[in-house]
Length: 86
Image (cartoon, rainbow, N blue to C red):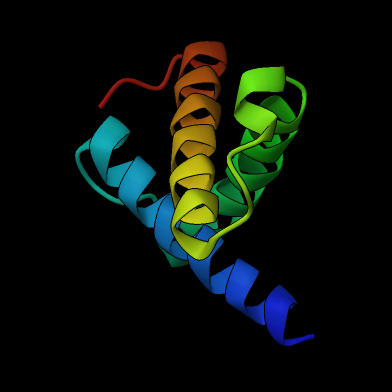
């Protein structure tokens, strides 16, 4: 249970960071958390299916980086699909 709460917090921070990188402003706390969670799932899926990256381990820092990069990808695709320009 504690790991799940920590994962939500990390994903929320990752979503906030990614949203600020892509949009130059946040998307709102709730949307940042959602995008971070989706980004964490997408990033984790990508990392686990690329053999050289699958051996990185599961440390807190690696999880935060993967979630942030995944959230950047998700936000980029979201903006691309829905033509959101900021």
